[in-house]
Image 1: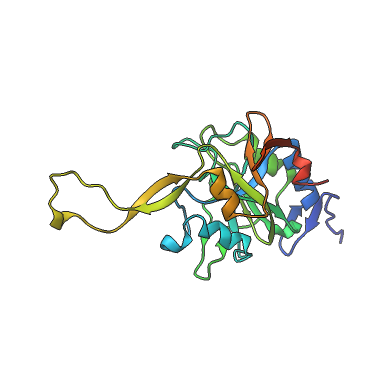
Image 2: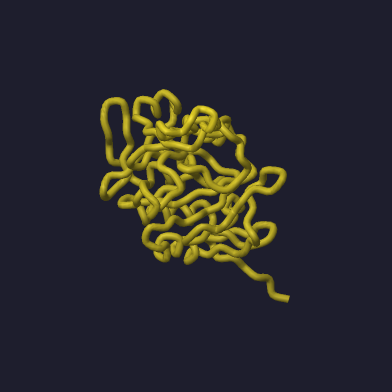
Length: 238
């Protein structure tokens, strides 16, 4: 019986074929794009960890290597929108990720995959299948206006921190009530809200990690002294 042979830019995993990290790097470089796990703003699917898993604790959790069971990410590029309801990511601030192996990439979709967490905290999708280079391209080419794509990854490297515009994150705040509402009807439970994060806070919170953002046409690395345009190869080398 003939064996099925994967192309050179694919690797055979336990269940299916996946693009190699080198092939994924080439795709990201070619699209001037970044693979980012965002601090949800607002928070999305998954276990409710409350205030202990809001920014920056959620991203520090990932950076510390405590999210190897899987993460939901989006591939974003210059010109994408990070505000309002029609936007290209579930947040504005996140960590830039890279794959350690072909098996790091679990699933991709031009829209929300509907991934979630099982009882053990593992990020899961309804079914895993082969992933082609065309599937990677579709996550940007077939992404609807005002929508975000989803990549699910495990066993990853952190390459830096990303800040879109406006750089806002989820917080819990005291609810605001009209003056006519009596005190006994004012529920003291904190409710979801948002706050902006400035660059100084990002530098202090994530020391040692490069901070990236987008200009209108490219990837920019922010530093205390200013900003410099960088190549995708600086993040995802050949």
